[in-house]
Length: 444
Image 1 (cartoon, rainbow, N blue to C red):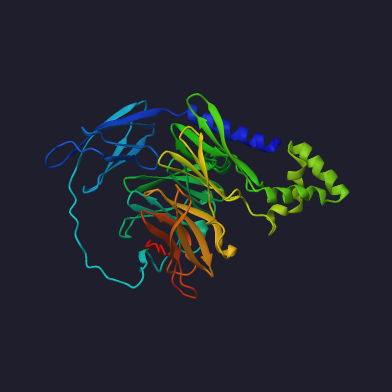
Image 2 (image 1 turned 90 degrees about the vertical axis):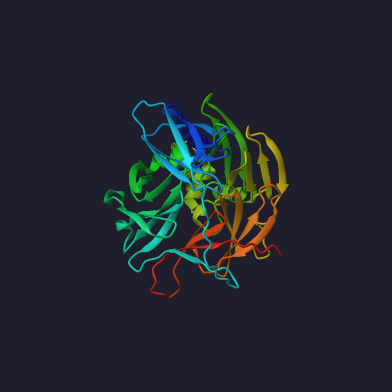
């Protein structure tokens, strides 16, 4: 459709502008053991709030090319050693920085363990003076969206792994009512407000909120899903149209490639039929609007009739995840899991049926990815109790099921083998607390 082509061109133009206007910096260095001073290999080196990272070589050296910023936080992780974060302040025009890092062995202290018949949720953060409305992860800490009364006076808080509040920051008044967090493909936590979207950056346990225009984020950042092999993976998805495409875009040679088309054919038939159900005057108006907007008459008719806001229309959901250099698309309309290699070439397609449970109402058309463990979960709801199924990214099969302990858990996310969510007991005076519980799959 013409309007979708225009939308796609706007996305591509934004990507080109963002890609060409961005400078790079090389972060390189050496990691050794603090006591023996021997080189440490396989140390994970990750640029915080980004997808850029690498690992040290056998001789302890590393090098990673990242977009230039005024400040970088680099975390070094290795099993059996205490993680370290190095904060870097960069001068204008600086194109490289060298880091010499030592890691110390970590010694586990075994606490007394309580045994329960079922997993008991941990209260991570809870206070009688404020409610928690959303959360995101930063290093081993949590970024929280909180408010005492109205979201027009919301605060962003940083809590450590034990739930201690390290810092608080009032959302600027000009931003308007705060709504929720959005985690973009670069790894940034963004706060969506009525008037602005704020990119949240953490410098030495303090917040810096950078305002971004809502239309810019929605046009040039949200469509980008992830990166692979130096390419951006993006989509022309529009919630009011029952078809969309996934594309790759190479920033170096400006070559774009269509990867996959997702379409609900039955819904598309009903969508297009809306035009033919209009009265003659309404059809004339639909054609006139289509000409003015340079789009298709079926689109204007579906919007005019309110079809996309009716109980008969549901926005498409076919998520794309990158798992170990493989692009995985879970197409819930063809009922297939598609695998593509890092160049975008199709490897195979595998039938899936986890999205068709015995009681179809339990399928919530939602999936979650555990970025730390590269695991995929499908989300269901039975009488207000959420449960998740781990889905193999290789075979598309169900690997096990886990039911959350609390009724009506909200803002569910999976991270490092734990389910995180917000919950307030029904008919309780308790504020909304932040919980987590260890996922123990029932594989029967």
